[in-house]
Image (cartoon, rainbow, N blue to C red):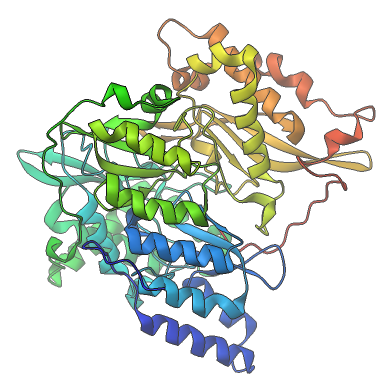
Length: 580
């Protein structure tokens, strides 16, 4: 299929990458390359093994989540031909496809390349996809659009051999204050836009991370002038390349370098490397190479045409739209069901963003989509068009809009089916009439779920977070979820939730219902959900949830099953390759 023409087509792909992949695959199949050597190689090209044998997960690198119509059409074709009819938006703004045959990888990659998309360095021990606030440029919090800076970082590191044979993965994010809109505090490099004395720059945090041993990023530069952005990023990357642990992948992230050296020594080493980069001449920041859709002119009408509002419009507008900095325009958040987008929806969106927005959309770290530059008076028509393709569900970024990792449906490391638990939580919060008032009060609560302790679902930094585990009771094993309470971000950086209690998978939705009700009953006047879950005593939570945690010989067999499971729960953990 020929991609639709578009004036906006950011290109990060190179057909030579695919030629090299095909050649390397051939060498492996002829026995000229070991399985381990090929595994390391294919991961750097976005091809991951799954829990199921003989199929792969293919991850598409989408810098800052920016997608134009040709890209959406390419994703639709790959989903239809190789992805069982859908793709998944990840917590790093990528799109990935599961159950892809290795024999189809080349064809899928070439279709993606036609639209400028690549899988290169979406996985493996590389500089991963650079993420950015999807509202950058339309909600700048009094600073500036970080989009061109993120693209400059992407192009600086992409295909750079010195930057992409690292001890482990390396993650970069750009966002805003207050509240750290892109979770910079959990990244190897987190950049927060700042302006001082009229000059643009960034607060630069480094060495953050989650997984089984979370670490809040520390401040490297209070104010990094924009001209030195690439130089400082290079310095951090080179320190990691030189000092990271290459013998033990479980202790290989930059955060472990920080812990081993200590903060004072670590910052000294970073500053020395930064000085060395500058002494070599550094790299000028050239924003002219970045791409962007044209900025629409001011709209002639600035209200939302009351006569054209359809059923459900007002509820959707209240939760799923954000007024832009530019008068007369709104950004629209498309709430996805656990990040899933069907083939038909990809194709519909390719048309809708041209008709209603600026010819692009962005994926978000909470597994949703964002359309920008929608004229306010066209919101009712866009709502109707989205509703026609199943994409007008209200409640975006509310307590019922749960983030999860893929879990045991496909991941080798997962213990439990996190997506199923996420769906159960959403269903309970949206259908239980007795909870309606409490759910409304707690609407800003953030819930995240991972299928294991590795935090691909980012459970550590949620108001209410859960990670999957197993509990043995006699001869039976139950799937359970560890509750993490009160995580998030503030002016000091990342904050990780307290581990309180473990709840069987089939009781998690009830536990969430009780926690939401607890906020409603015990909060102080004007207290936010984030503040409440941060300070509520563990003893109070135990009093509310401990009966749900109980498992003994008299517990019915169904409690020892995962959600939607009927054959008996079994822990089947393999060697994991994926961390979303």
